[in-house]
Image (cartoon, rainbow over all chains, first blue to last red):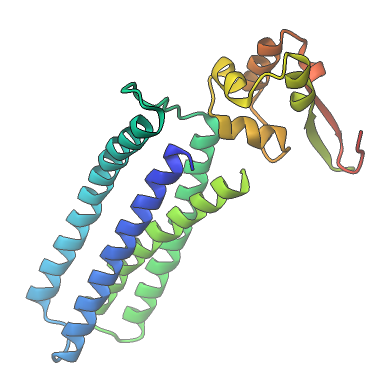
Length: 150
Length: 75
């Protein structure tokens, strides 16, 4: 598994955990009597900040862990050779494209719920959910392309 | 119009160059070993610049490494 694949796998797991956390909180709120604006705003803030922080931290962690594993395997302290070549860039772009399409569909569904009479809080909750799902789908498509070759 | 595909002789050229490893070729061309594997397997068609770099690594002209042929034709 290349460094890029490891990094995407870590990002995928983080996004899945954030998604589960978000959904669990949403269902909890729904069962406690519906969406409350003050609680849901803080939940959105936590989720959005978590996505940004997790993306940065997961990259750093993958780099450090890969170097440690490389040092253990080879018995030398030199850093592993990390190159991002044209294929990596193309896979990244394709992943972004898939992610944008998924997010656009999510936005459309969120707008439709609003158009059919659901409160704005539901629409915005779906927007946040679709952004998390879009990240997950983007990660999965990149992993698929790496496994397939291109 | 017939469908065309980029074919390559990377495996054969590596063999002819003292069984050069994929890692060695990757280092010479400035890419990852995974990219060399994808090119060799015909799954990824490299950019013109990378194609030239690979040809330079083998010290042969570009048409000796890559060719553009109809999809059905197998050598």
